[in-house]
Structure formats: C-alpha cells, structure tokens
Length: 413
Image 1 (tube, rainbow, N blue to C red):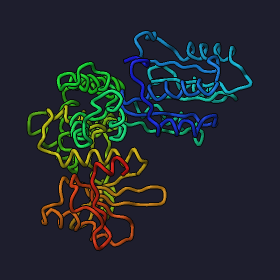
Image 2 (image 1 turned 135 degrees about the vertical axis):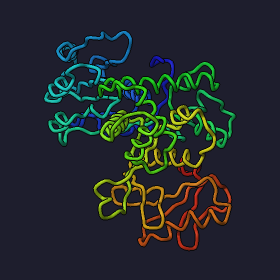
Image 3 (image 1 turned 60 degrees about the horizontal axis):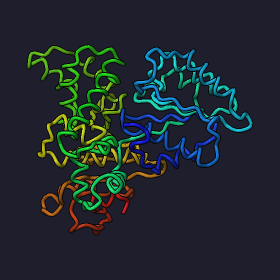
Image 4 (image 1 turned 45 degrees about the vertical axis):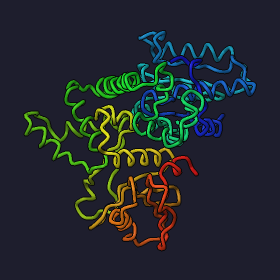
C-alpha cells in the first residue's frame, strides 16, 4: 500500500505530534509492524506543508520500502540528511522523519548527532522496543518522548468503514467484524473484503512480525517452537500464565526446552509489540518476586488467525479489546488479585484508578452476582465498572458500580 492509496487521519496521534512540534525531545512512534505508524508520519508531514512549512525544510525517509538500498549505513544516512539540511531555510526548523529506522545499521549514531544540532526537529518510528536501547535511552534521558501506536481503535475502525467500507453497516455489525478481524489499517486497502483475503493479509503481518521483529532480531532459530508458543499464548489469553507449566507440557509432549528459553521468546514477542503482558497486582509474600501474568495479543484479528477464528472464547476476545483500549488511553494495567476473587483489570492513570470486569452478558442473575462480587469486595472509593455487550440492565448499581455497554464505552458515548 502506497501513501497515496489509503490515508485517513487518526486524530489522537496528529494532536500528540502537533503538541510536541518544535520541542527539543526526539519524538519516537513505536508499535507493532503495519499498525499505521508510517501513515501517521506521512499525514503529519502533509499537515506541516499545508501550514506553510517549505518542502526543503522537511526530510522524510522510510527504510522498509523496496526501493531503499539494503546496505544503508549510518554514515551515508547522515550525509544525506546533512546535504538536505544545507539546502533548508536555516531561519526555520528542519523536520526530519526517519521511518522504521531500526533497519539501518548504526542508526543510533545518526540520532545522537542530529539531536545535538539546534534547529532540527526529529521524529522516529520503529516496530521493536529496541529502538530506545539502553544506551540511547541513557543519552536521551529526559529528551525523548515515546508515543505508543496501536492498531485501529473501534472508534477509528468505524470512521475507516465510513470512508472505505460499508457505510450502511450498523454499529453492532461493525463491532462483530472488528472483533473477528481486528483493526489493522491495511485490511481496508484490500480489493476484496472477504475472509480469504483478510486471512492472507493477517498472515502476512503475523509472519513478518514473527520472522523480522522477533526471530531475526533476537537470533531465534527454532521457529517451530516460537510459532507453537505464540499459538498457545494467543489461544489462552486471559488466563494466568506459568512458564513452569508450559515447559512441563512441552517436555511431556517430547519437545525439550527450558524456562529461560520460553521467557526469552516471550520477551522478544513483547518487544515486537504483538503481545502485551499484564501482571497481577494486590499480591503479597513470595508472589511479589515472581507474579503471574496474563498475555493479550495487540489485535484480535491476529489472535483469531492463530486460533483459526474459533468463536468459542468470546469472553476472552472482549477482554482483549478492553485491555488494548485501556493501554491506548494511556493506562498502566494490572490484573487484580485477591484471596477469593480476581478483578479483570486494574487501570491506573496519572491520578486515578478504575477497576474493570469484562463479560459477555449480565442478564443471568448468577453471572450478575459473580461479576459484581470482586468489585464489591474492594475497600476503596475508586470507580468500578463492568463492561458487557448487554443493552439492558445497565446503569449504576445501588453501591455505585457502573454497568456499561462495551461498544458504547469504546465509542466514548
């Protein structure tokens, strides 16, 4: 997909970039490959041009395109940027956009050099958390800002459908599609919107992330074990994960491995942003040293691809959507753990906390009581919420717990 084929603004990211415009910090957009980082940069570049920035004061280069040389070095890149800067209007900022820069050997040297020059406003994107390596992070301490980019939110998904999809589809129909196929922007560029073509596109994204951003970057040779682990993590998302149990299951099936190997593979998956780990909170004793975690894919389409679009685990899919939306909104999220009950998510913001339960329906009285019980056991005054697909029996309970429709919550209604 080329820049001219499919670009629809994602307002939240455009506002963030505009807010940091001309600030001394290096702006770093990071997120899973193909989630829309390049389109966001391109749209922001076009916005600068529309505001009167001269083309000679903008340098944009995307390093994952076919026309890019395979042997771009830090030295040749720095020379190229320097030559462009010499032609710019030095009385105004010079905007440098380096897209998927982690593919350039020694790119950190370029960033260090450019950041030291006055008048250069620097923007980077990367599909791996290594883009802010420990050395570079130390050098740029306090002088970089990270913007986490996710696949489309449901609200963006609805907007994209209004432009490129079926404008007549109802919100509930669109949510079913979103839940099944996820929110990767490139799905909207497909000429045929059917499951065969969508599956091919999702498979392409999945394979690229696994091979380029996980296996190749971390030197993983056992691709079969990596794929098997991903399938397991995706299919059991929403369940507490134990490395020891996974190793035991693999060994008993004749697959030798170690806890260290599994943990290294999971770390690599998290750094590629295809997977998010959520730790337990509210635990004590020895558990504090090694808390269990739940893992959630960054996109339900990728999750369902690995489980062959199984419709049997709707509850965990809803949890996945809610978790990623909370991360998108900037919350630090934990799994709430207690002696007799578990809260799906504890979302911590700058000065607030919200407790969440996520369930398909609350219409059955036993489910209603079960979902509310963990929230009622919490002895503090922070907001508590249940997200459900129900449109009946919603509202605020007598003890102040809000029961809300998940779709409305995703749309900020």
